[in-house]
Image 1: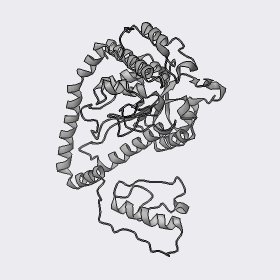
Image 2: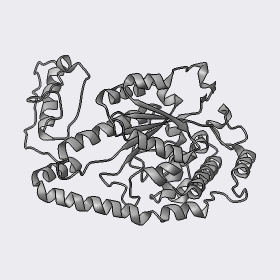
Image 3: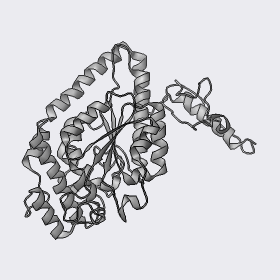
Length: 393
């Protein structure tokens, strides 16, 4: 690990985030300032991706759950070489910018999910990890492994207070999704004050009860984060990595609710830049070492994808029927010729029975149709014909 470069990237994430939020006079500096080291080490040393092809099928996925901290994501995507120009960062939160207040899938290169309300992002990450597991089971062969990637997510206390994250995390533990790694930004601050005014859960015990590995570390120790991720990959379960942090680190009011969801103000930005060691008279400043670091990785990242494509071509030649299914999956084409289900005006039928006919038609027509209803498959009529409740081929 190039420690100097990682520090330069973290400082640049803070620089871009502070200035973008200040120019917009709106946004959330707490996460970008408080978790910049994670951004640097995650995109610099951990994730498998190629910024020149953000849709590479076997890339690692990163799902931002704490979406209000969006400048954390935009800053690192820009530095890593995705199509997130500095001009868009300068128009953060403005109409037409590729950098809206919360990340939106399909609008910004490298953004894997629309974060939505708190907790939704980690729930999407669980879905992505399920997808990886199902794709691997269907398409990998004894000779070739063409689906082999991880899903990561960043959550805060607010995300884990929401019921949706609890339900999804419980399912992830039940399914033993060992390709799912979630980072918990443990700063213990909410908008109204310390989180313990409303939230005193023992998160470690809660996630252990869900069936997760739980690891603990320091947000400001990149080498430790790398070690914890390596440890997480050895387990047969999803992993929660709890990283103690300081919200709004380096800002005059760091560690308080005041740095959660408002621009720091000119004096606050100046003081933070002085504390970090950034030039106070330059806006949207990026340390040259940060650009150099990621530019130096481009060839190796492109080669990793090229190696995968070579393996994929060999797999395709060996498994033409699987390749046909793969192409159908990724183009939303039908894998079988199945007639439409039709209903006549005046037909009398329970809506759940009508739904059962439709979902069975879809499942037989599209091999990648996935659904579920927990343990209510019978009364909800979600069981697929000739299938034990699993993905129908």
